Image 1 (cartoon, rainbow, N blue to C red):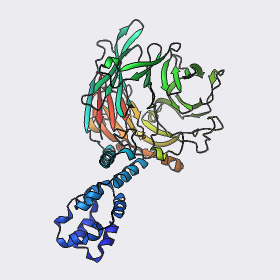
Image 2 (cartoon, rainbow, N blue to C red):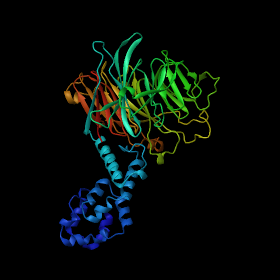
Image 3 (spheres, helix red, strand yellow):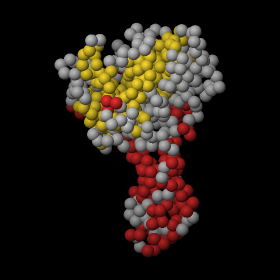
Image 4 (tube, rainbow, N blue to C red):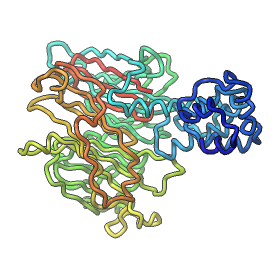
Length: 513
């Protein structure tokens, strides 16, 4: 705005002053103003193209779109590749999710694609941060629950493969001689209604998705032995959509974490086993109850009832049968539930081999406040870690103490259904019991709420700052209902999607981008 004033000099007309006063709201072509005003713009219009590009790159996205309406020259500049690649790069550096980007590089995109992705990412962020985000599209998957058996509600998880987003669902189908039979399905979310592209009956409700996008095995199931499955996305018949990549016949524990090198399994006594897939040997981690397990490069992060432990798996001796943690942290209270997710970071901004880890924790206690609060912890990379050496107690890839980034009010009633999920950028989505604002009573109903996180990498620079406390009213409300039919929630933050599971087998996918 100041640059425009400088360019106009003393010739600024009172009409043009009105435009400058409210520049962000500019939506009227300058040609509608008197000819004198139009010629006052000549110095801006006649600028060299490269200078005009630099000026446009300094504008916000709404301002670029407003300037597009002024004249043909501005319209042409506002469609240039330089402008939109710069703006999209700026969003990426701010760690904003970019829907539909997948694994494509910016250089491979056309100017029109760059503009489309930039506007979609900006609109998603604006919608996501409002008090009541607006659903742009709703998809319904109807699974058939097991009749008259009190079967478990469906479980589901988002996954990304081959440049598309899918959702895996698992639903109890019927009894069998040893337990129950489950229906495993993979759904394509790019069509409406969602289309089942792969289907298989399995003998267990335990599965784990491989987070490595280029891996042949997309997931692992226990059915009853450990079976690694791939997905044929071009299969004409869903029955042939899943195919077996490999099996581990001698392992019967349920899978809890998987990457290309290691598989972590758990037995009925909560004992963890680490399987090196190349060597097919297993070591075990000491016995205690397990809440969450995640493999990150050469470490395994384990969340127990009150302890976070980090195990090194980069240099395991084949004769070593028991693995001990290289670092651990004891929480103040026992954990009721937890969600863990690595922070997705634009590759050019990734300073460490190990990304920041987000943890969303609901504590359990006889005291009333721990269970009614969600704590967002971040486990930061250790800047002193030597990547040339394997992780050890003297060479930790992560700080051994999680930092509380924020505390979110999320009250739950006794015996009520509640659940939570953590997005790839740190956004917390949760089902709780805060319904008195909508039904004037707090003993019925459920609320779906969320809290958008600012860039968690900035926590590393302001560790000494006080904890950011967010009240119930600070959370975005995605919906509420007067019964307790919601059973589970999942989030695909990159695409702006939330999935809700219902008692009757319905899965509702809400799109906000």
